[in-house]
Length: 186
Image (cartoon, rainbow, N blue to C red; front, side, top):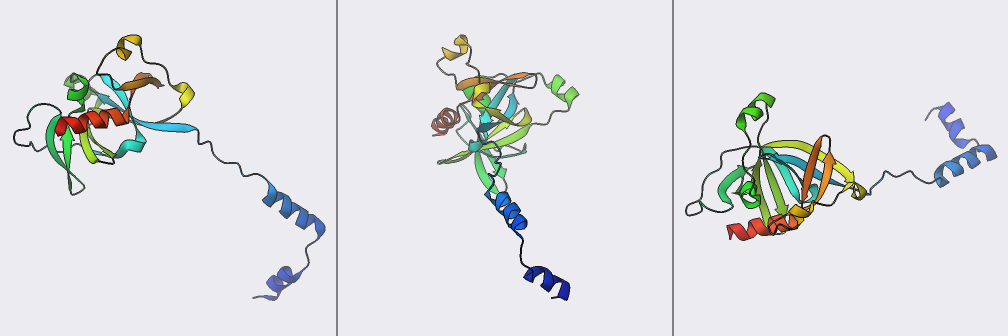
């Protein structure tokens, strides 16, 4: 240690320096807001939907779906390779009754289909979506009630609506969707 460093370390602190250091360490720490939630916004057919990120494992490039024997109807579409693991691929569009979009408009916008891997305590399921907008953070007071016509539908998995840029997005109930998809493949 140099002589200058030793002198600075050994010099006594004056009252002003002690008061300044005390005020600095005694002040409240400004913490970032944590009263928000997040969803992954995506398009399925012509519908813009959102899925809670807490139930999302990953988003990957769309891949070949290998069909399963005797599983050609319902929500099961097959299996996909996700990072070396085989994951059951299901049709969220089939569950929600969403029709496919016009592929010509997707080609003009250079939209890339993606594979979303959903997860819960039972394991992982993969779905293919037509477009991923991205993650959107929101506060609970930004959520709007779903329209009465949608609320009365017996198979509705939408719990609220959310405005994301120019899109009105239906926020899906993750547990209901994953329950229904799990029942469909069993």
